[in-house]
Image (tube, rainbow, N blue to C red; front, side, top):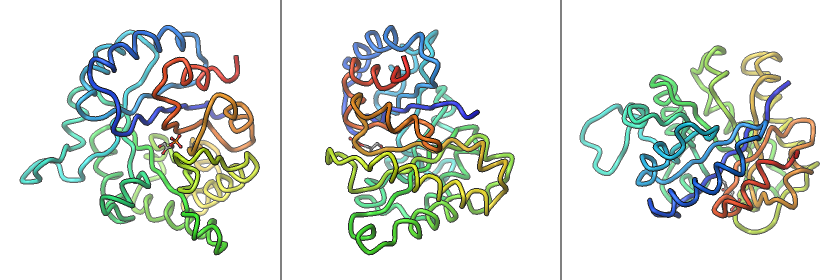
Amino acid sequence: MRKKVIAGNWKMNMLPNETIEYIEKFSKLVENSDNEVILCVPYIDLFYCLLNCQGTNIKVGAQNVHFEEKGAYTGEVSAKMLKSIGVEYVIIGHSERRQYFGETDESVNKKVKAALENGLKPIICVGESLEQREQGLTENIIRNQTKLALEGISKEQMSNIIIAYEPIWAIGTGKTATSEDANNSIKAIRDEVSKVYDKEVAENTIIQYGGSVKSSNAKELFETSDIDGGLVGGASLVPEEFAKIVNYNK
Ligand code: 13P
């Protein structure tokens, strides 16, 4: 049985003092959860988040990473740097990075490799745009993004990878994919993982859904056959609301 993994993606929100206040409230609300809970926070908040999550069941992730280990890359942060302060997860290839910051399938793959080599667990995002969906290309796009992100990644390394299916048209729009639709897309991604590796690897890979997840729809989404939790944007900014999502099965 795969566990449920529920991650918050704060995107470019929350100051360090807000981070500390958030964790104080949130950690008490999720301490009895059976689900894995992760907060992916801005670089500036990471250290505060790590300090304040010590002794709790909350894991900490970053939202991006550079693929080189060090050097003349002004403004970038390496996987080794993240690991050195105790970060455990990193979101890679979020659609906002693909859309606004020139992230490509190739850079996603390089970042996944760098993360794994440095002991970080990637949360790889894939998902189609509205236009691609309307053209009937959804399955094609998400299979291809999955395959390219995993190029050169060994079967053994797959146990440290999470995939998040985030249809772009559902992000921040209030429009959620129906649980059936999201489940079917995730089945296609799982089938692609099975083609690249084998059925056992596919059955053990955690694949989340992201896109307007809230406490009112979390249960329906997470109780489908293939959705293994969520990557939550807006609703993760409010500790009480995000805790309800994490505790959807209570
Ligand atoms: P929303 O939950 O705000 O739609 O964002 C989803 C997302 O992009 C998480 O990475």
